[in-house]
Length: 208
Image (tube, helix red, strand yellow):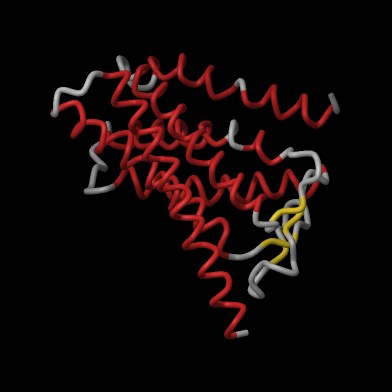
């Protein structure tokens, strides 16, 4: 296995470690973080798979799928930030989703920047929209809409984990079944978001 792939696998371990460390940020929320890790992984895996399958990414080694293992880090970090801020009385409606969106947009920049530095993958400039820009971190040419949609996907994840889960539990669906059902729904919504992404990119290409 190449060194860059080993590095990605090592970084992916940070997610499970953060689940354990959550007890120091929000005691008793470890199970919620495990669920958040699980749903986040499924959501971003299907999104990357569709992007790769539709040739929006040039990724001959399939490296981008390992990046789905890194996204739970952003999800749990968003929860930490929200927990720390709300302890100080900063809570407003949908505050957690706003934080998740902002953290995810920054995280998307960092991941694409790392990909550019390490030469892990590139975007297919023949298919992507014409509003692309160069990531200042790694010099990767990327569609401007991608970081935004990664943030939208995290909002979906947060809604499923912290809102839809409560609805399912109130309907007397057990914890394991609720989590598996959310994983299935996350795959559907991740796929739906990709359909929207593809449509928006084609729309922009048509105007420019």
